[in-house]
Length: 147
Image 1 (cartoon, rainbow, N blue to C red):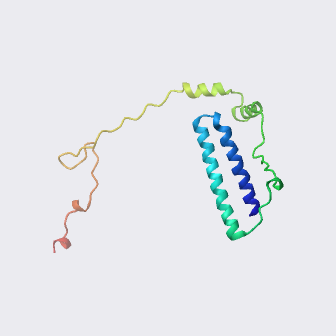
Image 2: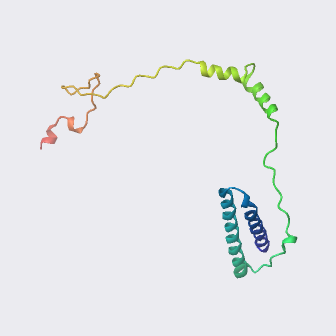
Image 3: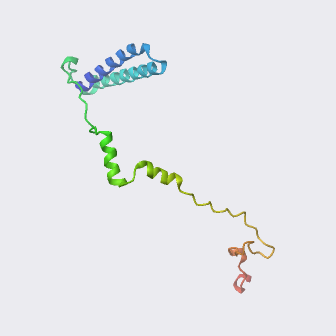
């Protein structure tokens, strides 16, 4: 936990330096650096308090801390090779331009006409010849219901 406190102190120091360097940047970027400094300082205060009251680990000097190393998340690939491979496998003999023109030049099917609102006729049927659905209210009474 002591190493975490020391690394966070390094981050807070770097954030303070970034605020000083951001004086020549637009206001938005300068504010972002100030926000970063506040966040790093708040986190450092919390970690120092936790270490002083819970963990009691010694905080190593900054010079003894390892440097942060990055991780390679993806390998770079030449764009032209990627495009050529895609064209060979997916397109066959046709070019991207030909496929695009095929998509753009295709005539579109007409949209189906929307039906207007349904109307009920005087005899209880639907105007389009459809029958309305029957509900319990339309069911004729039987002898059992009359009792």
